[in-house]
Amino acid sequence: MLIIYKNYQDNTLMLINISKVDGKPAWLTYPFNVLIRNYKPPLPKLSFAKINDNYIIENFKGLDKYLYKNGQKIDSLELKNIIYRYNKYVKNNKIELTSFTKDDFLKIN
Image 1 (cartoon, rainbow, N blue to C red):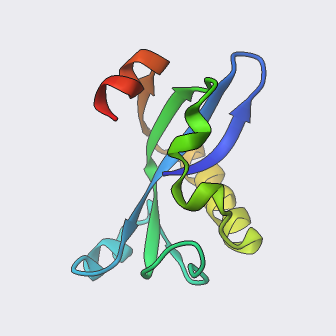
Image 2 (cartoon, rainbow, N blue to C red):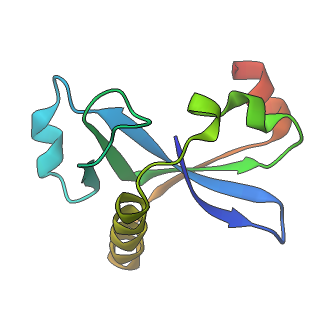
């Protein structure tokens, strides 16, 4: 998951799903998937962001211990491109939004 927005008012984070390209090159033809060209580090393989697959999670104390690679950030230009494409996509398309409370998250992790 990639954090794309932090809401300070309700203390939540918006996340989008990241997936490796291996075995799924056709997925890159969909307008809701964004190739992450400069992925390394922190991602080990060529990956893409699924901008139509969104999650909202309560930002709770201790969540940082679940961060991949200790929260190492992806390339800032890649992040800007993903957020730009996300904002453009959501203007004209319906997105799936899944919400997690702290308790929900801890049950499945």
